[in-house]
Length: 84
Ligand SMILES: [Zn+2]
Image 1 (cartoon, rainbow, N blue to C red):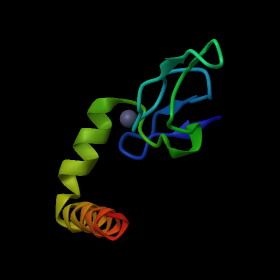
Image 2 (tube, rainbow, N blue to C red):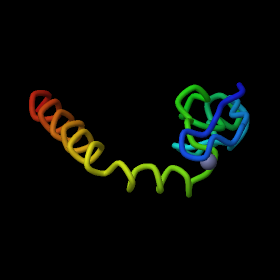
Image 3 (spheres, helix red, strand yellow):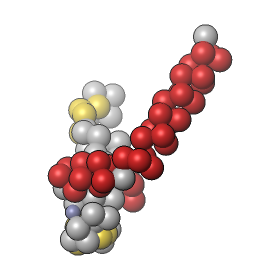
Image 4 (cartoon, rainbow, N blue to C red):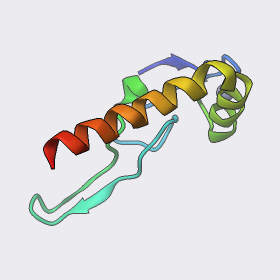
């Protein structure tokens, strides 16, 4: 999948079977399936070519993103509370 980094506009190619692009949650060995799962981050959700670009973007837009991050966490907490 051809993508342009949101921060620096560099072209990169994340796929199901590579480690390219961020945000990226690392893979793991699946014993039941007997194979390695490369990532839980679908290529379409990897929007930065490097970790550095992701960090720069988040810190540059902290005024917008911090309230969103906090709200996500709050909703998660509320959801957990309802389940308990
Ligand atoms: Zn970049």
